[in-house]
Image 1: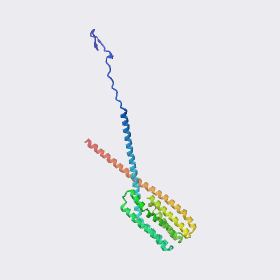
Image 2: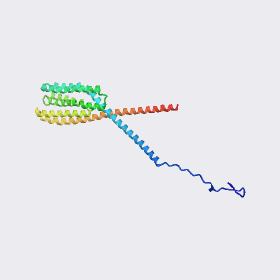
Image 3: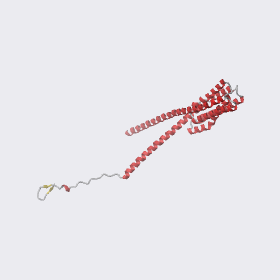
Length: 288
């Protein structure tokens, strides 16, 4: 209200005389800040993804290392205990063939097989003493170095067909075939633990056996009917053996892989519990 010059009559003030204060506009974020925030978020997400991927790769590598070491150690542990059985089968085969085959042939064959078993025993004993806790790559290199020993044994047992095939009575020949079958199929679950070794051993064994029966038919005038029967049976047995070893190896790998997965989950759970306990201890200490 204002006072006029003509008295005490109050004249209302004009509303236009009081202007409202200017309104402050909110500051807008510049495009540079928004881009920086987006870039930081993308970088953080990429870094987290890379860390997760690296972690998965590390776990996969540890898993494969664990499986390979378990397979090799189990094979060597079981194989070294079966050397006496291999020596016994060799002596049984020599005893069966001795009355019907020249002595020098039996002695030559037995020397090769027995010598291979002795060398194999010392090689596997060296592994048990020095390489049981070695990395899987070093164990694999050792297996590659001693593979020729197993190939010699496979060739020796495959060539045993020359000693008895169509050279003795049916009963004695059946006994000799039983010994060869036992030598081949008894260690098959153990050989399946190492696919590379089992593949080479079975290939050498069946190839030598097939070559021996063909040589017997060519040089010793064996029955052609027996040869025609032996060839498809040998090929069928080789195919079945390869399939069996693949299935056994797949089963064993799955078993040890499951063991690793359970151990990994248990370790991660324990680490999570320990992290939570440390956090609770730190939070309690801050409140006190």
